[in-house]
Image (cartoon, rainbow, N blue to C red; front, side, top):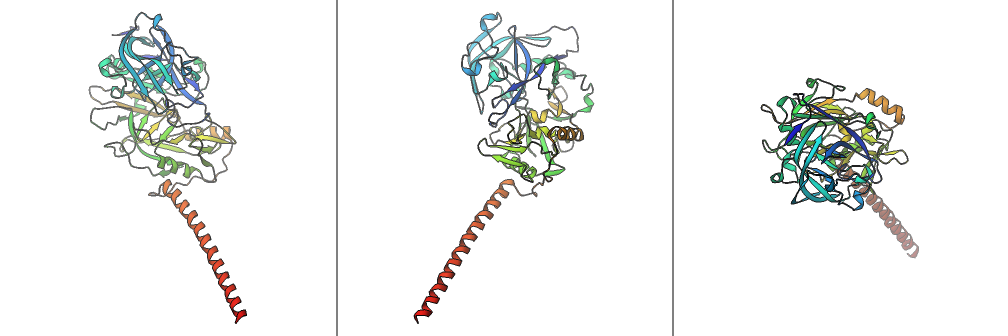
Length: 458
């Protein structure tokens, strides 16, 4: 059952969204291991069974779950946990719940409970009580669970057990208001009154814009018609200082170009190894990037200032979205001797798309996720919020001048792996040439010595 506490027929609501500080790597935030990094989650205020929680706002999953008071392992310590004894509206089933990430896992039980988001209340909402979590580092953010807002097709809780929360919300909004919109802020303050993040359902944040015509809308990509799993859209190109970075072909069935998933639950941008290596080789002129074998991540000089843009959408309507330089040279990760974590990292284990565009991209746009209407499929609307010139000036003022030469993108048809192999081959050939030359000199000298000795004996 769905209820709302407002008499306003337009059915709009604004929720509290803030940035949570995260010290440990987690697949919820990043699919790459960034040792000792300071990562962030975006947390949304949610009431479950009359109990308040800050839980991760995640467009890369579809389930709602919260940590139970029965969870006693170290991952659950120091956070607000759901108490079943404090609720009169909880119904538990015998359906087990298991969700495994690349790093970390959740085990628990499926149930139903009254869930309140802003002024709206959903009775008998399907969710999961997590009795055991591992490797998620929840205690470091005060994060008590996840609010998954992707499509039902990828829900871990069987649809036979109930409807995911996004579908329950969208069902009761008319076509005009069947959307949610968000902006991920940069403010690190834990005080919600200073938060520059925004999350609304059924309306736009008037402090940002009231005009949907400013957005560029793209239908969500579906490999199979009318079957949607994640909030996906095509990547047409990536440029570095106006130079086009060649991208590998998509591995997503039926995709004419690489497919990106917009994922608020991931911190970094993740892509195929070959493309990401080529990206950092291009930026690394003057020794400004390096690959850390220990952490298996790319690092970049903290003052490295580059103009990176990602062109998203279908080929006829695609638009470029610039990244703030601080999202490329990510100082919120580990800083050591002037080196920062790269905001773009390689991960070939991403199976939801070719690329994951996490917070370091999403902080540069205002986003609308539009549900299916009578006349349109689900859509993604993007509005650029980063001015490249202003961002570069802010970055240079904060980090200092960049002494490195301009980036140089590899020619089309040459991959970073090929370059790496070519360099290795040249090194091997050079070593072999040196050895062969040295051996030749030794043989020549030995023959000369023998000839000289022979002449003495004759």
